[in-house]
Length: 250
Image (cartoon, rainbow, N blue to C red):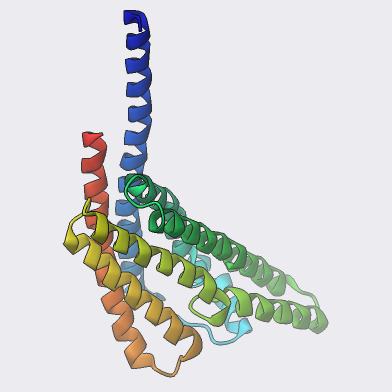
């Protein structure tokens, strides 16, 4: 093999390594952006109207008309952002473990992508905003009745943490549990990070099961959600920082 060929191979290898360093980097950025978005979600709760709730379709229309941002947020606007950020993060974690775990790592990626696709397909935040605008300008009672029925159908599919959205969250949380197990087995991430993800995603899966199918257990749901959320934030921070380190090593 000539010296020129060796030089070209070295340059090609360096270019490929640079691309995969970018995968790790943007995966780390996505993890930390998810943390920022989650913290923003918590802070919004303390803003005026942050705890506003809507029980009926008319209540949702009214909320979306009076405070569009809060209405969209309550219908999963920030979840859309976090789900989108989860794509580069999940792919980065899959790529980190691709040579070490040929079963769980790709399976976790597949589950995460299915969960993401279902979430996008079922989220009804912006269609509900459009229906609320139509409802406000409807000229007669029959039009309003039709729009109210359409809003009810939208909520049956897209209202967060209900049977309509259960599959989207369940697939994503199952993927998170598998990724945490992979991290624990392959030891490229710390045990603290792996256990944080395992506990966090398990609690969130339990939370979604209870909130979707046993909504009467309000006190238990709240505790499980808080525990899951805190451990998940810890997992995202540790995972993001470790991805930055791995990117520098490759």
